[in-house]
Image 1: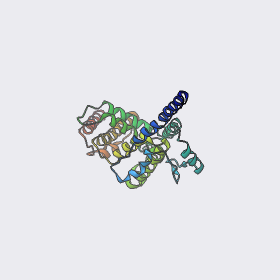
Image 2 (image 1 turned 90 degrees about the horizontal axis):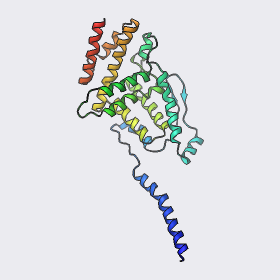
Image 3 (image 1 turned 30 degrees about the vertical axis):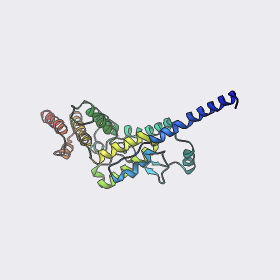
Image 4 (image 1 turned 120 degrees about the vertical axis):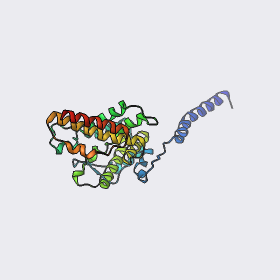
Length: 265
């Protein structure tokens, strides 16, 4: 073989190694889904490419969100979804969180009530400013706070007065979250959102217990603010949370709010 031929073979071999090596390495790092609940099958899609759903999802306002058509699904099998396209699709759906008002306030005729996103944002700030607790992952609490109601972008803010059982509410939200994770395109971020949401839903970790308490604290703080601003009597919101705080942080903050309410009343 001539020196020119040997050089060509070496270059070709190098090119092959450049093409093959990344595919081998990415195979070994494919994220694996590890949920603690039997309902984890709803989120296994997050470890692979998003696949089309066999049925549509109905949003809380009655809007039908359809799955991709079969031709689109086939096209997606050939071409992975653009991460930018999937992200914008997901964020556009999350816009509903900014425009959907919290149903409890609407039903009590509160003027200009907060949105679902307003509620989650202040919960995120609560997690950020809370005192350090040994063994507690603050970053996880912040993330959990901003995703715990994310399924309401589709199902809306379902309240006890709607006559929907807790089991039915949970099922609707699980299906909505599954749809949203698929819309995001699967992968590690969708996986993380699904895990955080499920952990909160099942109250299965110290972080979930803190965020559950922050959910109640934010609600009664907002109730106090509406009482002061609009002259409303929203005592039922305080009564609904009484004795239900799980953590010392939640109890301390709730006690402070109750103390201020007595002074201002």
